[in-house]
Image (cartoon, rainbow, N blue to C red; front, side, top):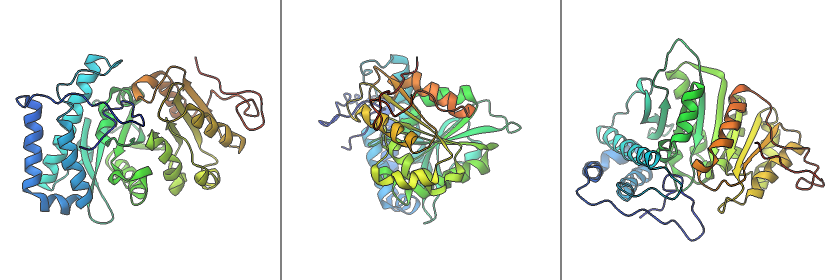
Length: 347
């Protein structure tokens, strides 16, 4: 059984403590069983539609979902939010399966609320995307567009099934699109290029303010933003890395191509998966290279998106308002190269 981030739960080096499977009589399990059987019956169709690797991903995903149905909330996860998240994950994956079997994506422009559909990739396959559109969407108004990159092992549906990003999107009049990216590590090609297919599709389907298009990534996605953004840096109005960091190998290209784009680095001070100093060092080094960078740390936050809501909200508001990033002192301080200052934790 594939190990996933279990809706944003922390993954330590030893692995993930999974919820107990639901009893077979659970109606949610019946939905998943039906969807799983339908894809297996039309496996050739699924492989043509998605490509063989992604078809296998979806089959495994449907099996894994059974473990979530009826499980108790993890520690610190409110029951209402947990139930909402689990129900969303199951519904989104069943939606995917139904569209795969029919070989017919639902129209992106018709989506309101949280749903799954597909973008048409250059190799002729259809690649999954989770989409949130404010329910009161009005085509006469312009909306911000957030492209959200998921963690690993986590699906695009799991990222948006949680309440945080959807609540921020609805409050700010934003549309969020989360690509699966073929599940490729760090959104390596062709996944990186398909992020831009998702941007193009959303801009065609909705009334998007093209000066308010943002790239946000969590965990693996928080690393991947530094790989994906430079591919077409002119498309982005701001970039946010949550629980991620930049790799040394990607620094020169990012600094050259994304020099004029505000960067918002967010993490938790008690993250046991990605050392918090990595985010701090990312912000410090890039700021010293002349970029506009902020560092937003939740002192008790962990490698769980729900524990970072306050500082993600601060960074989100600053990003969409076009405000200079906050939360970083002069980085020639004790934690920055050769300095004596350090990050400010927003209050």
